[in-house]
Length: 192
Image (cartoon, rainbow, N blue to C red; front, side):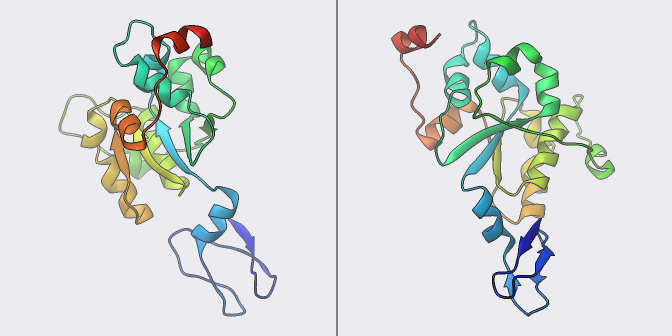
């Protein structure tokens, strides 16, 4: 990210996990400059959260819908373009304008090489969530009902890169942890 040094007004590029020292000797903190642009924590959602949110037969619908319908606060919900392609454009049209969609252009080879001891291997969409967490330090966790995500060691991989605590859990745990209000039956019918 390119920033202006507050001491000498030089423009320079700073990096996330490095010591960023300006030519004038000023030590620049990446997270300080990042939070001037982004003043909230972002949580990524997997495809299953979006599918459950718009499936009227799902028992997990109320939690997933509460997450997808969250209004602006200190938290923001996002996903990747690969996840949107996986669930389809019909669901994308139903998402609010507050919903962030990250474009992950390429997934590095070392991330594609992750293998588990189980039959199901991570899909490109799943790996796009991990890559988005790598690239964007504001991402604090991933919300998914996919139990294999923990087996991929997502949390450990991201924590190593970002040097922070990374959260991984399902929609119910997220709603309870952040005390998100779930609309009552009557309110759901009024809103659509």
